[in-house]
Amino acid sequence: METITAPTRNGIDTAQVYGTLDLLKAQPELARFEFRVSNRWIDGPHSRSAIKGFWAAGGEDASRTEPFFLDASEPPVLFGHNEAPNPAEILLHALAGCLTLTIVNVAAARKVALHEVSSTLTGVLDARGATGVDDTYRNGFESIRVSFSIRGDATPEKLQEIVDRAKARSVVYDMITNGVPVEVTAELG
Amino acid sequence: METITAPTRNGIDTAQVYGTLDLLKAQPELARFEFRVSNRWIDGPHSRSAIKGFWAAGGEDASRTEPFFLDASEPPVLFGHNEAPNPAEILLHALAGCLTLTIVNVAAARKVALHEVSSTLTGVLDARGATGVDDTYRNGFESIRVSFSIRGDATPEKLQEIVDRAKARSVVYDMITNGVPVEVTAELG
Image: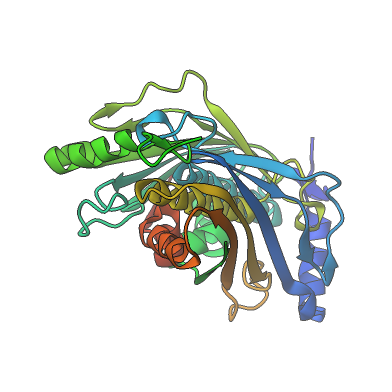
């Protein structure tokens, strides 16, 4: 079992976390990250992304020897064959993964051992928007609900502070709640 | 090869598409969709989502007999072990998949056969935001660039119109550019 002085807590090397924060304060030019995805259409709504390299800490990261491959498609009701989850579900997965790892990181930094972090996410949309049937509806989710169940060695008040801090620091929560400028260009032929 | 009167174009059953549009106009109560993800923390930044059921067309969809499982984690520089892509990369994949399938759907509806749709997506962020080192930086991507390469049986002008229409109708592009209200609740113990 871990003790309060153990460098690893919740599977996070806290000494590495503190060292990274010190490094970013001393050399802020190392804080730039660039993440990338390459996607290729397969058939119908089915496509596949390859995810491997990224820029971090002043150079191209070389920790991945093989790419990750992730597919996206649609169920039959949306003209696909369930080859993969659909993009709206994948966005919910991105949000779940980011809030969860941010909770785990914040808890580790605050010396709180966690035993369970599970969540269910729900997004609701009216398809009259995306289909162009009725422009009074937006294309995407009207709202997203995230319900966590968290068990850890801390009071409910301290666990709630960790959740609140994670909301304030999550990369994907920020992007989904506040939006991001997206530039789309196309080479056509 | 397909002809201009074939019901399937780009792998999309265009008769089903037109039938769905007619149905949504006649019975708008069928337009409500609810998508869901269940996520569970594994260790460190690593978590796993299960994706199966959803609400569509007035009832619970039963087309998936098994759940999809998608993981999220981080590379070593962000305190993980590359068990999976990270949430910011997964968000880029959601955007790539959604823009691509919307381009394919729009092209099918406009009787344009596509031969290639590929894309590269790049998101840039300054980690001083998410780490709390400097609050003048946001947590998420400052911006996202999407570069498509598209080949099809149409003029570049017509292909550009398809891209523009897909931007105007993509579920995930709407969410990422405009943001979505997210409610987070936690059951703590």
